[in-house]
Image (cartoon, rainbow, N blue to C red; front, side):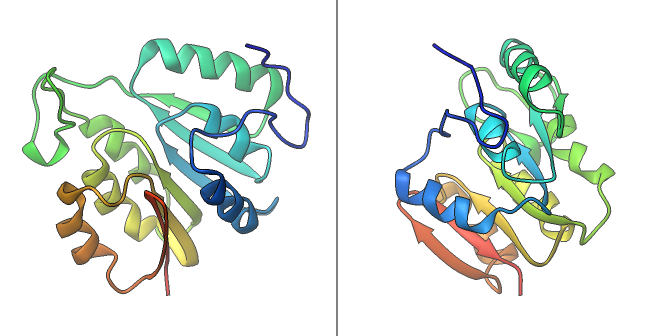
Length: 179
């Protein structure tokens, strides 16, 4: 795979529906500061369109790969590695057969001031906990973008924390805008 990137935009798209990417692109601008749970091609793509981006990753291998690409092509990205644990609170459970918990991963956003982020993109692990911890960090008019938002396991949290936000759903991704 060719990872040559042009300075303004990544040639690599995030692994999202094209209509979702188009909507996301219309929201983003060079003055925005954002947070991402789950790094990947989206990290490269988003960071080419914003002032700064912090991305949290749980996989050491993926963290190294994306860190190398960002170090070479993006100076406005901070990538954090937060290793999952075999023990933890049920509210940070990430699901799956490995029985892993993501408390450090989710709580990494607590270092950010309330009402300071223009957007949080949630496309990683422990998404329910990520929603809960992100709501206070997004400024008025800012967004939480949740991939796979139709999953039944997310609905109670969405109804509790995001029901007063403007919502636009495209395919499996929802854009929640803070009023």
